[in-house]
Image 1 (cartoon, rainbow, N blue to C red):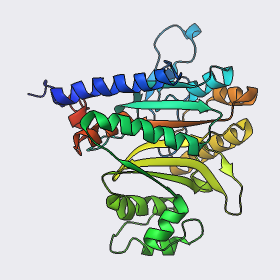
Image 2 (cartoon, helix red, strand yellow; image 1 turned 180 degrees about the horizontal axis):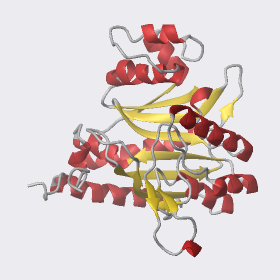
Image 3 (cartoon, one colour; image 1 turned 135 degrees about the vertical axis):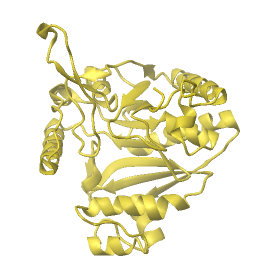
Length: 322
């Protein structure tokens, strides 16, 4: 019977209503829907994200044979922003190798959008507003609670995530035993989030966690205060992470340094590194606008709306049936 859909017809119809709600929301605010390539000449260098490689079999005049399925539409969307298009979004499929399980599917749907002239705090408000509108489709409500990353760890666990050493972080896990081989400071902070903090988040709360340690900046700006912080945020609905956003880095030289740092980390692990996106670096160097952007997992949102822990329940055909 594995020819049948993994999702119910209710879930398939709800996805269609959700997509329509998202498009109506942005149309009312003048944010343009765009489509960007699924295949690119450069992949994602992030050491924690694996890209699917592809080999183009056509004529060599078409360009390099090595291609990568996108892990998000971020880089081409940023190229559009640098070209002057303005506020835009994309709702579409993305691909990540090795991510399959109860909450993960190697191909899934991502909503990503950018607001010119905004910072991450402004975008938190819009993200929460959109999420509440989507939750209303199933009669749910959720209040927004914002808290700085440092304050959450200090208030809930009694530790300082910016300064406490690894031994303090390990001890804060309590009776949760993890093989510590090869784990760095940020890994322990992530484990504290997934094992000690997330499970206690209230189901009716949208938690916006902002201003992360500078070491977790990814593609966000770093604010150089007394304690430098990355101007990024994540939004959780109950224990489920839904969105990850940044006050976007606009410095091409700094972005290049981060890309090369990713490549070095992959090399130290013995992992291959996709080609660095030279076109994104050129776009940043040409003049990238001050803006904020966020990526939202649509399948995760549908899981929350239907109250299921299984991503297969919201996919017409999950990876096992594809």
